[in-house]
Length: 76
Image 1 (cartoon, rainbow, N blue to C red):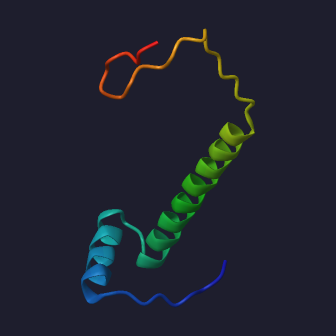
Image 2: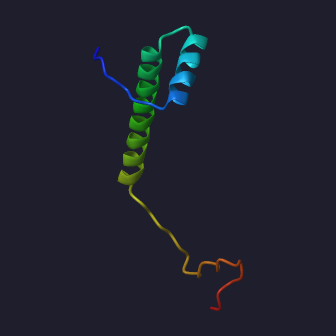
Image 3: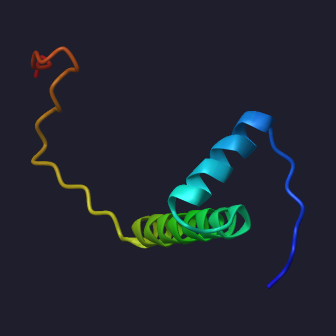
């Protein structure tokens, strides 16, 4: 494990102390857990986005025009 120094607003530090006490842990461990969760969330999002981007797209149309945004049909 690595030790780091974190700078934050006084109000944030007070919230972190109270939240850590509520969870029966230290501020250091609370911040570490929050960052680990953020990292897992971001990694999962990136994997899902890359999977979606790699999918082959198949666009099908029967030749009829798409409806206009206002819901009316285009003249054809």
